[in-house]
Length: 133
Image: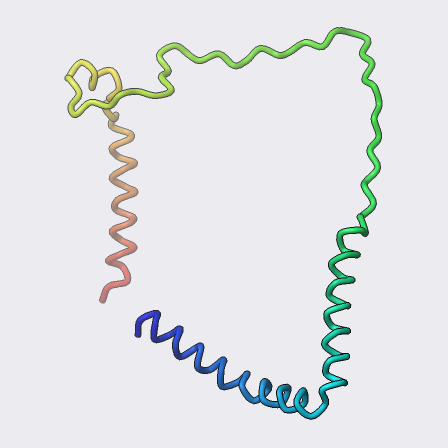
């Protein structure tokens, strides 16, 4: 169902629910023209008064207190953090690194790190296969 069909069906539902109300109001206006004219004019007057008074009535402003700052010594700005040597906030990436560039950043894992990784992988495998029949 596309959006046009959904909107069409929704519009039909709204029309079906509003049309009896509209018919009742239209019948009342035809039968009681003077009363309905008075009610309509009162509604319009109320709307006009609401619009006028909403722009005239202002909310009280919050009180603000100002006090001058007096210091006994001159204020000092702390130094900004320094950027460490070799730190680049941004860089242009290359397709491939040379072996020299890779050697700078790559650290070969030691025996302890490889053992810890092996144990962690074994635990994960045991959790997965432990639940299997």
